[in-house]
Image 1: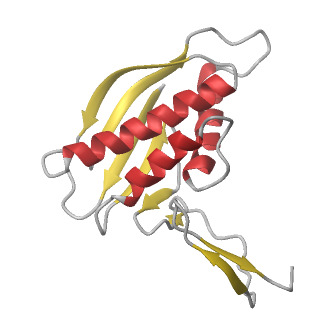
Image 2 (image 1 turned 90 degrees about the horizontal axis):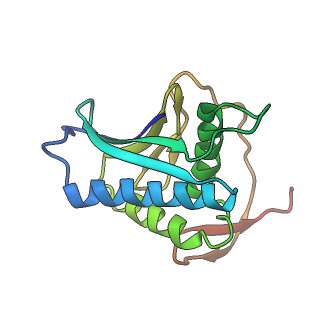
Length: 172
């Protein structure tokens, strides 16, 4: 299955993109993806690399070393399931055992995106929410926000290796 890390923004195409930043973002993502597969007991194969002109994307062919067990989902479904898991780690959810260094590397690379740039992962019909430098994510086009909540909160902490703020609310 083709898996790509796409970077978009004003005037972005392979000829204008900072090569080191783009390669680090893709490398950090694929390293986290491979680690998550290993934690799940799978050997993930990432072969080849190609630059896609659309905006600017680095793509690899992803597959598992062993075929699926009888009655288990096909390889594409297993890869998308793994991508969804890794997307949570990229957004700050607790990484799997031994994976925090990989998640931290990815978040650091994401935070170095230039202003106005965003990135997302694409695999077949599946797309991750866009990542931006400001750590905000946006839902894929056509997906409405299901609910919003207004709460009065108190800040209980700010900072850390990954910039974040922690809040407490009496209402929940």
